[in-house]
Length: 288
Image (cartoon, rainbow, N blue to C red; front, side, top):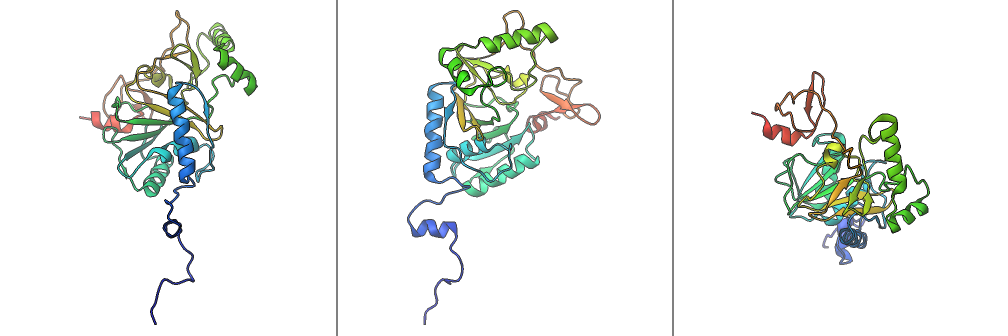
């Protein structure tokens, strides 16, 4: 009597996939879902700054942990990719570590904490300090993709403003902020004009990073899972922060130089006894 696989044990996802001749679905995204995301990405790249709807799926991450960016990453990543995941510049936060483990385990790809070695970088609230190459892709998480959300609460009305390029409410809100407080109200997520025609939310990145968006040589993909929207910036896209000609947007003020690498030009955040670079990898690379 020959022995074979026990029928008492339930088949795994991989076994079922092989049995039916279909590729295995990873992290709640089957191949049809991934194709849907990739088609939306192509549309978003064709119309820079435009919000493209896509069939957003429920993902195995907590609310607000970047399900949109995760769907974009999992739809693009392959076994030959090297993935870097950062949370506000840190590779080792709970958010970054959990995302990295999920992506590498499901996609069977390598991971790194080095910006230079990565082919695909998923980030929350920061753009890497080290300039990226044309062969690298940056994925940003976006909680609120509608830049007119605060001034035009009705989404249908906001779409009407986008369709004709009428951003008067945003300009009036910016003027009111200057008149009342001497500057914009936005600390992060300051809206930008793409190709001088389309208003876009750049993700909750600091103003320091907003000022670095113009003409980058690599694509940036922005995913909003809860709102089921994708936006994109192709390489070398003209990106300008919403600002008046005589009141340019200013980066955040930092304190003293970094305690670890002594940089006085990087984006720095408060630490226990001073200031440190937000981007941990760039800081370590600059350390003597």
